Each structure stands twice: as structure tokens, then as C-alpha cells.
Amino acid sequence: MLSLAAGMLAAAPFSHKLHLQLGKQCADCHVNAAASTLPADNLLPPAAVCKPCHETRDIRAPRATPVTHFSHAQHLKVGNIASMIAAAVDKKAYLGDPDDIRAHLNSANICLACHRGMDTSEQVSDANMPQMADCLVCHSQIEPPYSCAKCHDPKWAGLQPASHHAPDFHDKHSTKAILKQGCATCHGRTFTCMGCHLG
Image (cartoon, rainbow, N blue to C red):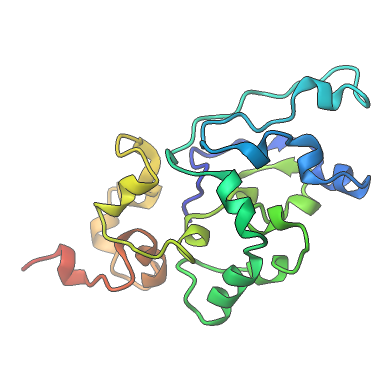
């Protein structure tokens, strides 16, 4: 599944679980998130936020993201979108492998709808970042390749899943090993094999 923060985030040791158990709210540390209108904004906690409890801190700069258009401010105004994602999973309209995400969509913390598992996380990884299928619950107009640029920089090399670069992809991509539902994330809900293979 393609993460919005794709680029394979190496697991970074930091216990969100501990900080949330101490009564912290996401916005207490990620003070810039509520006003953020660009995906390139640095939403990591500034040093002043960590200083009351930590003498030193070592927070790496955020990595580049394939998303070029996204506003935390706009999405926070919508409120908790967990119920919308849950409804898509329940109706089998979620365009990705829902795995166990349904169980993570019951929190009052609005950040956890997209940053699932952060409340139990001892290290930050791609698993805690929004998935493209989450976005497609509301932003459902998929017209590849034209709609990709609405959110992504077309020059970003990491948009195609690694499976597309495998030497045997063309032989194996039509087998049951690849779910059509996962293909719909990029190719649209109504794509057909003949849409690409024209004879």
C-alpha cells in the first residue's frame, strides 16, 4: 500500500505511546500542524516544546514526501474522519487492504484516523503514516494518469510500487497474488485489464 510519506521511513525510535499516556495531546508537541497548509511544512516538535522535559533532543529533519498538495489545517476543520474511513471499510469500498485498520478507527483523537497506531507506537514507521487509500475515501475522482498530479509531483520516482519494477511483474501481475482492489488505488475503481492491454 502506498503511504503518503512514501520513501520507506526507517523506523525512528520515539514513543508516542508514552507521551500520549502522560496526557499529552498531538497538538501539544506538533504545534505547527493546525496551521499547516503545505506537505513540505516541518511539523516535528520545535526544541522549545521538548525542553521542559528533555535536556537534549535528536530529531531528524522530516524527509521529502511525494505529496505536493495537502493541508493539515483544512483537514482538521473537517473533524474526525475516522467514521468515513470506517464506513468505506465496512462497505468494502476502501481501495486498499484494510487489514486491521477498522479496529483503530474508534478513537476520539482526530489525528489517529490517519496516523493509525501512533497511540501504541514505540517507534515511528510508514505504518503510522496516512495511506493513499485513506485519501481516496473522500477524494474519489481517480483518472490516471491525470488525477495523480492533483496531489503528487509527477517527477517523484517513488509513486510506482516496488512490485511494478520487478522483472517478472508483467507475468505475475494478473495472478491472484495481486488484488484488483489494490490496483484501483492508482488505476481507478472502474479500470479493466483491457484499459492497459489494448489487444
